[in-house]
Length: 476
Ligand SMILES: [Zn+2]
Image (cartoon, rainbow, N blue to C red; front, side):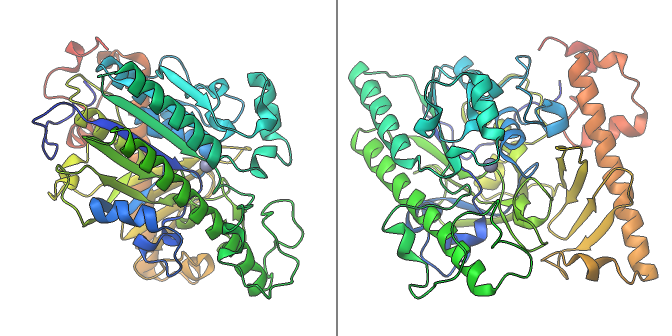
């Protein structure tokens, strides 16, 4: 009823592909070579981009790990899937990507390095095999203890490395699959955690990008560190960034090794690979560090790279804006799913095939610690609302790509005011659509919702309503 996957994927003649889905936590696209970064942080990831499609403008639904992964796995915005705070767990009622693919005959395996992917938060739903690669400090802890430790001031996971564990455990899973001669297609999900602060890459990555003469107070501790503050010396900030870059290069190397192992075992044949992140990272662009504080582009923009040898034309760059919620319907489409899938994203496989799609705004939100931030973004503009009680701010991204906040709002010209008011109306309309979508999904009884003709037309235009009477569509 709410969304039907279109059968418009690049090519789909043969068996459904294996799916290898990689989420590198906290990875900013502008720190990758394929996105124009000047330092050699990502030779392996760059090679994936060369083999497939790189999305220039991919955005997250929020700016922190838990709700972002829930959006990846459900195709729903934060307020719709409901997993927006760290005291919560994903409802069993939600259909996850792993559940959907399992239903399509896939073997589903997930490996995670960060605590928010722990089963206590509910993102394990649908995985046949789901394995922790977190810091050993979490071994033997109950779900509640994992939650407590992660929410403590200095979680051990942030000071440890987890990539080698992921490599080792994925290799063991792959060997088991080969030994069993499993012929089912697989869905393999990897959550890579090391790029998340703090930045403690092992040698030789620790030294790779730092100034060897640096002797200042900064180190890889991004949080709870007096040296990290607005106005800090550029050379200190550069040192922090160099350690962040070291983590990226370290993770790039781990991925290279994982891929080499899968390749050697024959598991990369007919495999769709998709690499992304859950959010970016702030390095004082707006006086904050880390993430889950704002919805500026330094945390909203994420890398998105997809390749599938023989099926996706190599070397493509797509400038259309795409969103994390698009991944679920897109994977469903590639897996040959023909059912009805409620999603606030759309199947972007036409873009992967070099075709065009209508431009869409991306709605993002942040609802933690009493905050209620909203953003509505296109490639040209962003409408930001810092709090639901505040008027929104209009950002002309073409003129202010760095979202210089004060410059944007003062002084406000009559033209500026007009644009801001128009933006505010667009944001409110998008929020209304999202609320309506949630209401329909929650009730699964669309006839009980009173839709105005305008609303019906809006939802229909977005692909949320089928052509038929919604009352016929209550089954799933
Ligand atoms: Zn994260």
